[in-house]
Image 1 (cartoon, rainbow, N blue to C red):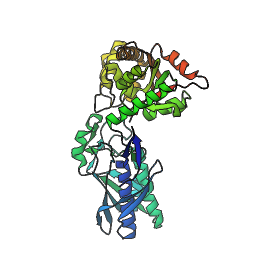
Image 2 (image 1 turned 135 degrees about the horizontal axis):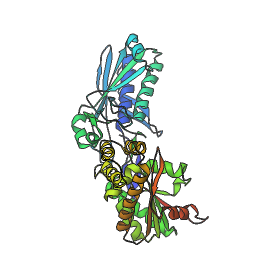
Image 3 (image 1 turned 30 degrees about the vertical axis):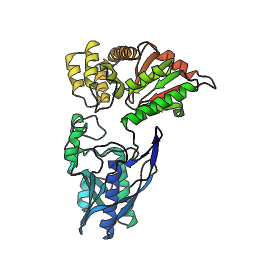
Image 4 (image 1 turned 180 degrees about the horizontal axis):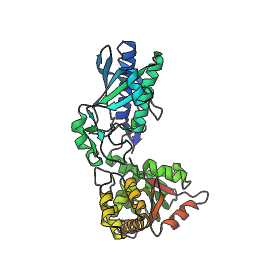
Length: 399
């Protein structure tokens, strides 16, 4: 059991580890057992965020030409449908003539039963590939390569990641909507799951709002998760230490900001999250509601786009793919203008005129896509804060 804790609203909560970490650990253990012929009861891995884990290896099956084993996922105190699932790895030798035909780097990784398969464009994995995201995929390959180097093995190895219960569990996730069929995704950019229950998160946001208001901060900035943090730092040059994460609870955050007595608030977020505001969706988590493509299609039609353009948008899996369609049809700028009108209306109605409020929407590919009328002035107020004054930033986490 991972003995790593975080404190949320004065509560001690235990962290867990991701399906990606489980897959990496299982693959590493299986590779070591295949190459050594000896059973491995526990395996050590280093997560991308630098946390060292020693995990028990279960369901071991050693054959001369292949090894199968599993790692049981532990989500800690985080509510997660994949908690307790067994992630299996099968590692086998690969014939050299096969390796020459597929031109790979010595480690082949694919998904087996219970690991989803990508069927639509726009995701991090190509169509037809197993839904093993880039970071876990890199972890698996490096772990298996490490085992091969330890035994001076210069041949090639094939890894099959599977999760037998993933077929049923995937039905409770957003995967079917994303065009990922047949199982779960192998995920995890940090390798660690930090617990954050809904009420604990909202209470934490409220506490931090009060703290910053008590310190004299009046202008509050809101931006989404990791994407938002990167944008604030790399594009706007705003220090991340001045930020507060508010996850997907934009509506609740607006309510709490108004109640705390702030003067103004600026929302800065990725199109994938903030486009939902155009439909009045104030909890942007995928399990709460979607409507991204419907909002973009409606805004495109309103801006003068042809019906065929709207249909193509509705078929998209990601907002980035939808933006590409708008760009190619020369409708991106006008569509974003319509979206910002809708977002401004929603923000004004939710805040009830109690604070000045605005928004900036961006994408990774196209940068700033649109601003509400008050956004520039609010951003100027934040950027011009003199020494001894601070702008408080709220960052709804994404992914």
